[in-house]
Image 1: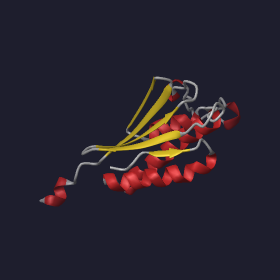
Image 2 (image 1 turned 60 degrees about the horizontal axis):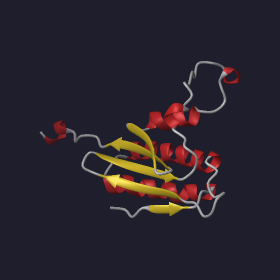
Image 3 (image 1 turned 45 degrees about the vertical axis):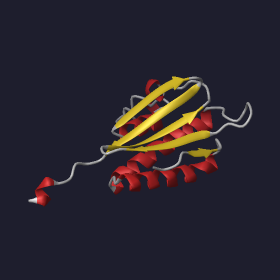
Image 4 (image 1 turned 135 degrees about the horizontal axis):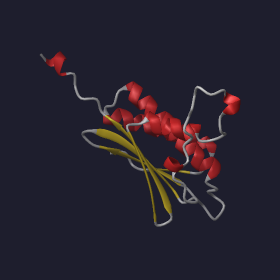
Length: 146
């Protein structure tokens, strides 16, 4: 089990968060492609927290990053004390066939983050936003065992 990570709400913390996600993915035994998808999604949500969450304005704020690994999946939980923001309510319905100048600004990153993982959950309790990003392990190839 990895110890939780506490990082300041600054863009230069993204590399530390990314390294933590990859370490969790390795510890959880998920394949390289799933690890990449998880890192991409976590990076997008963390960037939104840092850029728009207005953390650090009232005392010392942190983003708490926790890895949860079980027999079926690897989850990364991001917690912050910024204003309430449910990414699931703000993702752009990405019509990628429309010309870029005809698309609504914003929300595409959240859309991609949610689509990159197997499960995305948000809740808010006690003044804390909690984003849970989950990637499931692939079942073993039983044909190879025969």
